[in-house]
Length: 193
Length: 193
DNA sequence: TCCCCAATCTTGTCGTTGGTAAGATTGCGC
DNA sequence: GCGCAATCTTACCAACGACAAGATTGGGGA
Image (tube, rainbow over all chains, first blue to last red):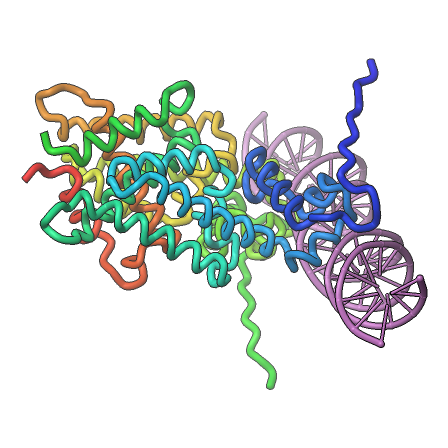
C-alpha cells in the first residue's frame, strides 16, 4: 500500500526568508526526538528545505547551532523564573516546569561541552537566570542572611529532579504529575515541620 | 624540530589478548576527555592498536560499547554505595564521590538514550544500586516509615549536585572541596536544627 | 528607475565516521 | 596435530562536517 506523502513547502524562492529561525526550530524538534547529538546539520537543512550547507552561513558550524539554542534557552529560562516571582517554592517549581516544557533547550543548556560557553549571548542570558535563582533562594534563608549551602541545596534538588525526570530514571515520570511531585519533594527537603 | 614519537605497543600478534577490556578502557579515557559522544569507534580501535572494525566483534556497534560502560558503571556504583553502609549521609556522600571519581561511567549511566537500557547486565546492576539507595534514604525517614517524597528529595539533591559539579555550572567546582560541600548541602536540606 | 553590492544560498569536493561483507589468522579442544 | 570457532583483517558503502568557489537575489544609493 502506498503511503500518503506530505510535502512541507517552506521555501519558494532562492532565499528562505528566515532560515536562522527555521534551523533553530528544526534543531529543537530534532533534539526533542533524538537528543542534542542525535541529528546532523544536514538533517536540519533537509527539514528546512535548503541545501546541506546553507545553515553554515548563519551558524558557522554545528556547535554554532547549539550555542544559539543554549542562548535562547537561557533567555526563556530567565523569563520563566522571573515570572514566578521571588518565592522560593514557586521559583523551584518554575525551574522544573521549564525543564519539562522546554526539554530540548534544557538538555542543551546544561551540557556545556556541546556549545560555546563564552558566547556573549549565552553569558548574559545565563547571568540573568543565575541572578533570579539566587534571589529565589534568598527567601528560604530568611533573616539569617544569604546561605550558600542552602542555595546550592535548593538548586541541586530542583536540577536533579528535573534531570532524573527527563531521562526517565524516576519511576514517577512514566505517568506521574511532575508539578505535584516536585512540590512534595521541596516540602520534604525544605519545610521544617 | 622533530618531536619525539612514542609508540605504545599493546598488541604483538594477530590476537590482542583482551581487546574487550582495552576498548572499554579506551572509551572511559576518551569519555573523560571529550564526553561520551566526543569519540568514535575508530578512535577507540586506534588507541587499542587494532583495526577500525575489531571492536564491532565484541560490542556489535557503538551503542554496545556504551552499554558495557553503563553496566560496569552500575556495578561499581552499587559497590561504592554498599561500602558506605546504610547511613543516609554517608550513602549520599558516596553517591557524589562516585560521580566525581568515575566521571566517565557516571556520564554514560545517566544518559540512557546512549545505551541499551534493557540490557540484562545493565538491568540487574541498576536494580542492585537502586535497592541500596532506597535503604539509605530509609534511615532518613526514621520510624515514620518509608517516605517516597523524602527518598526522591534525597536522590534529586545528590544527583543534581553531582551533575552541576561535573558540568562546571557550580562555581565551587573550580577549586572547592566537593565532599565538604555536599556534606554542607545535605545538612542544609535534611538536618532539622 | 536602474544598477551594483553584499547577503544568502548552491554545487562540488575532501577526509572521517558507523556499519556490513567477506576473507585471513590463530589458539584451543578433541 | 588437526580442524573449527573465535578473533581480527582488508575492502567497501552511504552519510557526515567542513571548506571552496560560484550562482542568485533583494535593497539602498545614484
